[in-house]
Length: 277
Image (cartoon, rainbow, N blue to C red; front, side, top):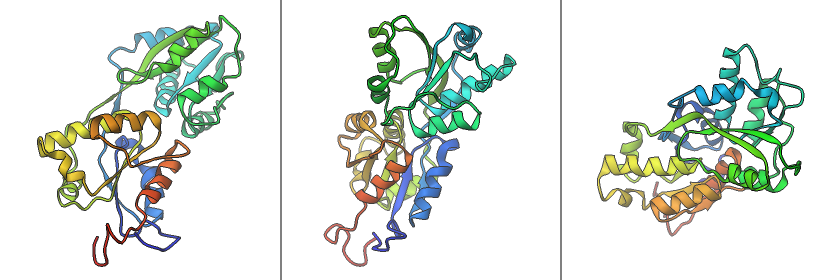
């Protein structure tokens, strides 16, 4: 890796596995550090199988005390459904408070004119539970979430704390059909230095896509690539599907993921002798 402090990833090739529509910011941050960035979009974000549970919950906003978002995708879906009802998060009932896990989720709310009332100090769901500002029993809470594959830790913890929790699917994240050809070629040629995973599902889907493309021996093509996780749950998924994780982001957000790529790709003359990639 380059010793240039301005471009520490110069000469490094990083694969981003975020959903296609979420690739832009990661590309910009990595490109600014000198990296060549390849796409392996491991998620396709789309609607849930049935909108009715979410629509029914949103039609009764006046009865809610908290609306808790664990992802920007949930914010986008809820706002779109509210718009169809002639409403918006910015003009929600005055007693309805918003909580957001993560800086990006909070920023999406901010752009809509609906500033989050609470954002936990660490950008993981467990931190939201630990630091949640209200402990009063019986409060009614709506948790819009991914249809499948997401954790139920938020709902389970709030129910244990005697909250009345409504948990509904707001979107689904499905596995794409294939890896882009240029990315697959770089993997086949052992030209990848790191693969960055932004969720447990991106790790699971990436493993499935690689198996489909390269067959049963797909893991041999990753021997020279560092596997970078955005947080603890993503690390568990990497361990499950790849048998390892080489670096975990801290903080657990996109900027932390990029910093973890820099740390993982630090130049090691034994691994990358002069004249190597």
